[in-house]
Length: 462
Ligand SMILES: [Zn+2]
Image (cartoon, rainbow, N blue to C red; front, side):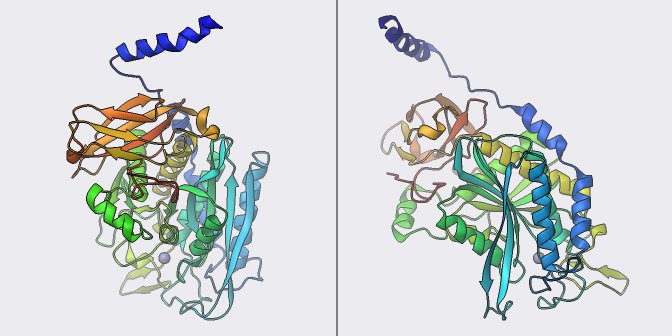
């Protein structure tokens, strides 16, 4: 026994003498496998099937098996079931719904129905990453629920992406849970997202990120530009539900540009840089496009991290338009306007992001920082809990100049719960910490304090 007791002391002195700890290598082969598995052909098939329901308007009929939102959502449910059958029932597939009435765009009592598929995590099943697309579609008049409304790009593309991500990721096992969501009622006022976010809150989901995919297939902008090498990620700044006290503290310690949504967006950006050829992510420091909406917002409203992933160049002749030709211009959201290889590329961006997040340990909690009037900066956080312990290799500190958009400096510091950066002055940088798994997958970077915390209620910053 005494012999073993000596071992930690020896290790400690070796560590102290070493110049730097080496971080485990990321399992890049796994990510490359997932990227190659994403199929543009299957995405095309799904978009064609969805377009084939004629209209998927939220107020359209629900009885028919071939036309309307009812037929469409039953098909989505069945498709998730088929995917689940192929992985020995690895998905929990269910409908989730709520009744809406008395709203401008839903005046009569209407059941808004989402279809959800959960791939349960093996280590920490109570934390989630979510990829969403929308089932519903619309034409010029948002209340027109009978005209043909193909919604091929808006938003069959996002939903087809979520289905394809489920096919590809369900071949693998993850530590955290992965959710694929088909949401409804988006065009009528983000109702499906509100229903899902409320349910997640009620069930105590710890959400590491929502990836809302809304229009991921158009590469021809309204101004004629053609570009299939960039994507946009919209990510809000300070939390919607930040308290007055938290806002006051943020004024003195920072965090305006380091909400969990922003650090989720930076994570997506880095995945593209490191693992997706010919794709650069344009990070946009906005909740969404100017004055417009999307299904990540209801999650943001409750304090959950969430971003919108979409094409860079929109074509307004192909969105929310009656099918018609006018002055030689073809209007309408038809599949000819969807670039399937590009939709597959953005789907792989989602799939890799979810794989990496779900292989990684949970983001560190209770992150705090100190170092005012000293040459050094010290970060502290809560050690990984029992669930995460076997998964975790250690932690990585990040920092950057305050006007930089991405993390530029980092140091792997091993399995400790506090670390002092010597001769790095707290005033001059923004700091954060990520957790790292034994197979080299990192959580998003967590900025200290409630402004940066991923799981609301778990932060206790100084
Ligand atoms: Zn739309």
